[in-house]
Length: 85
Image (cartoon, rainbow, N blue to C red):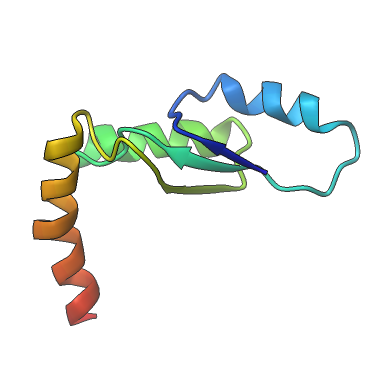
């Protein structure tokens, strides 16, 4: 089950409850604002989601604290790493 557009760890247990007890359906979070020049800050956002029980965290919109900044970071910093790897 994909929960798009949130970096709020408090939402994950709520969605898990909505999903119902004993469900094998995983929860995927389309993470807002997990891309930032401050890598420690960004990693903490994702760790909070995992700690709350998210099964997967994916890139979602907006892609950073602001969309233009997030897109620039993806294009200038992330994509070159993927191309070289």
